[in-house]
Image (tube, rainbow, N blue to C red):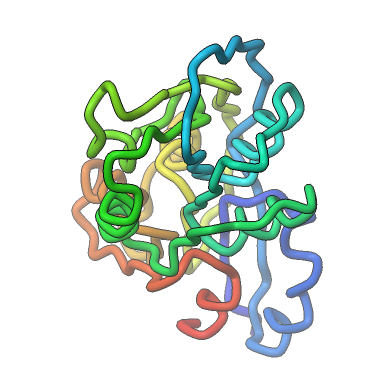
Length: 215
């Protein structure tokens, strides 16, 4: 009998992994509780680096702005790096852990006194930019994240991919008492620990390949 797994991602993001989930005998429900809207912005300050915290930050920023050849590019992880590559741009730093504090520390040490642009959502936790002095960062809102309420039937395993998806889930659902709960990274784990008392598993890297390994 198939085991049931819920993941807070859009279904199309799992298409390439359907066979792997099937081979592990999982029936997967994929639903995101988030929608996104662009924000018009004006950028009139020079910067040395740009740090992208998600694929969406890449898309919404580059839909309105081009990057000079002297600007270095950093990102939170491999999925975001793939989106950057779609724009024929080169990544100078890519986080390799799901621990956002570790990524923030590494990146801060790398850039030194350079000025960093952070294209963000209105719901951003600013986990990386918070380490930077005000004079050394530009926090630029480039999109809005809107919560969508949906009822989800009970599952044996829940995988939450962001703090905002946890908020969206809780609009019409209760955190399960007996299910296995997996967090995509430390920020999501911190959010889950704030809203439930169950043990939360934290993935070492934020990607489907790592999820399949721990399942």
